[in-house]
Image (cartoon, rainbow, N blue to C red; front, side, top):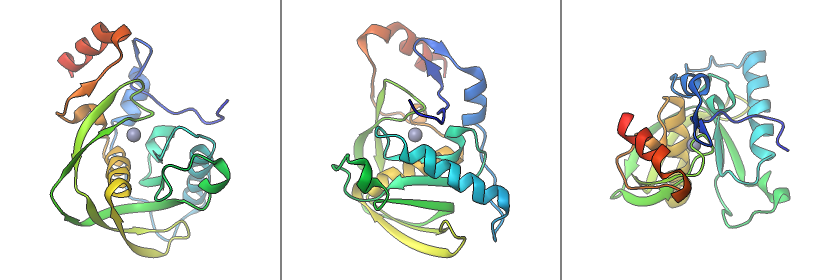
Length: 187
Ligand SMILES: [Zn+2]
């Protein structure tokens, strides 16, 4: 059982209005140097991320924290062993993409906040990001390929943007076809 609840747009075939409102609210920049509240938010997000084995990334608004903080795995994606996750993940605060390179590449993405579906999304294969690390130090990072995709996905969350907002083909489970068809018509 996960101790931190991840907010979702729907549960089964039930829309979550309250969660949706939070997930859709753009987050504010976090003041630097960090205050106690931000340090606590970073700890909480790290805990929530590390307790899951079904996520490569998690953004603060997904656990109800309206701050620009993301946690994600940046290497060894095929390795599902919980013990190694601690060495293979990063936290970025106030991340900003300063450079995007390469022809956009299409890939399938899922999201803990949009359970049961996958969407084909086109993302840049190389990005440069300016941010603060978990101690509040300024860092510049470069991410390639799948890591670049994960970071762009998590950064979308900070602006209230989700995979359902992209136009790409959507993969939905057969059993809930009616529900999802209605959802995508009405969005
Ligand atoms: Zn997501």
